[in-house]
Amino acid sequence: MKRKLLFALLAGWMGAVSLTAANPGFGTRRYSIAVMGEYSYNNTWGHHGNLDVQALLPFNPHFEMEARQQFSTANVYTTALQFRPKFELPVGEMFIETDVYCRLVARNRMSDLTAALEVGYRMDYVSVTLGLFTRVMNDWDRDWHSNESFVAEPFNLLYRVEVFCRPQDNRWNLSFLFSNVDDYQMERMWQPLFGIGAYVDVADHWRINMGAQCKPTGMFHLDATFYGATARAGFTYRF
Image (cartoon, rainbow, N blue to C red; front, side, top):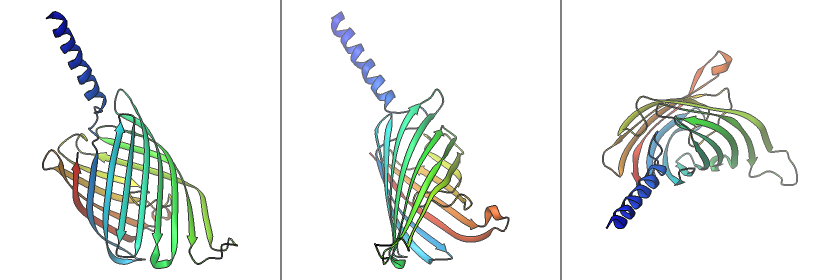
């Protein structure tokens, strides 16, 4: 009897350890898929709508992946992949992130490929990322035997600061973003984006997402003017 009780306690303890390891203290990361609709305007493409599909794949406590796809009525299509090893700290966690974004601008018959490597830190109330990215822009109609329409930008600074009003494992939250990168674009370092986001958990598996973003131009040239804005809303199903 004592042996059976000891075995039961040991099994329960092992299960508790496994559950704790799968759920970092600063916020639970669960397999999820999100679908969002966007209204967007900018001075280049005018008014247009976007459909976003996003998946979060936290394979284990130390590695996760994100995959995103955006379809735009501006005849622009973007695929984004993120690979993120994570290292738990006494408070929050540090991570190394590799990003690859591929944008097909069919309306102008060109593509924009960006790849980044970053180091970041996140906890209940803040997430900070700093890194470098490279960009290659290509004209689909160029002569493949020349480099006339091939444009490369080997080094760009990437930064992202997001502040949350409540701990990230709360059932609702509000956040503010300052960055030159978002889910589907990496802008040059002097073109920051300003954003606000919110979510509300309406059930254990369902979350409502909302957000808005503004992109000015000329911020670091002391002559800022409006370039574009985006508003989005949708839902997330968490497994």
